[in-house]
Length: 494
Image (cartoon, rainbow, N blue to C red):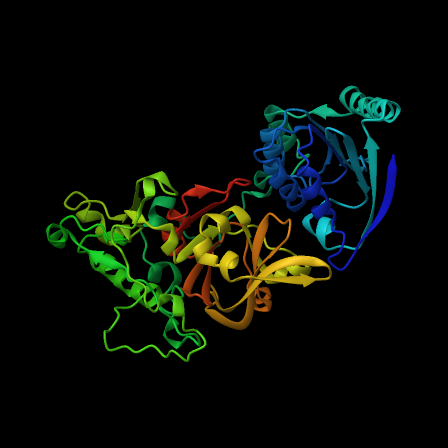
């Protein structure tokens, strides 16, 4: 048996990296004894559970402060051997031990604290690593006797086996967190003022001016004053009268099939956000720091596309949300408004749209947006990290990194931030890449808000953070059609 005490500090000896490396040995079994595990900590483990045949055993403490329905349901997706102990009482389960049983050895990590993203990567931590040699009969017997004894104690003593039915019981008894616990029957302001409360259907038919007043408008972001040179791919607005002229055109485009209503025509204003019509007299400054040589002789081949049905999206006919009050008399006369996503070449992706996780509360999580590494590998031409990233050593750890110019727009607050020293980076062994910028700490967002990342050129990116309570959120959320592997959040590309 080998025993080692390891000091995690200043991005060295990260326990998250140790766990990732141990999983690469394809353990047959893995045991997790977790006194207090938070969602962010479980997501690191979950990245390693995906597509593995490892048999998993979980014993965990639960409480109403940190444990959610989501984390319990997700654990049950990977194993039925889950046991819990309620930490809402005086006696708590306090133990953090991970055991990985491989072919020739068993590796055990023991540490303290609440299991979270920051604990496993950023916090100052001393943890114990013990290696049992399973090829040594005496040592193998000692290990197996101990692990079996602990598992039997969990199964037969004060722990309860977790099931889907048990999760509902825990929510009803308020042993764990659920949004249901925080919905109260409180009178609305209109009721307190003696006004009749509107039904949901009536609310949905009101215009923005009726909801917010004439002096309050939904924020619109004008990129014309941007500090960064911007080039977009065109979006073409198509009506029914022009469909016959298009024939069998199969170019790589996003079509908006719309009616003639004034509100839908106003969608043409989207050109302020997503593009403009190129003028043949426009000149490109080849000495500009944003000039991309790779695009100089680029020729688009209209046949060089991939059928989107075989890739990210199913056939997507997505309804646009419009002002129902002004168009309700035309519903029977006109066809439904549609956005038709036809064909997409993954090598020409210019927009990556996804629902954000909950915002980090400290450290490096405040200044970065994390993106699963498999997304980067799926659309490598979008991030260009593999081709244009440089290998850099930071404190003995290898990073792939490249510098970019970044503009961030907080749509809800109409704030714009520019960072000419932002980075796209990937640390060796990590399951995600990140866009790193000090300006991100200025943007407040919550879980499931949408980030729309637009690639303007090879070295210039624009990010819009779109809050759930904005009208345009409905449009972009409809384009997020694919679930991430490790969560119920969704993403899409254009």
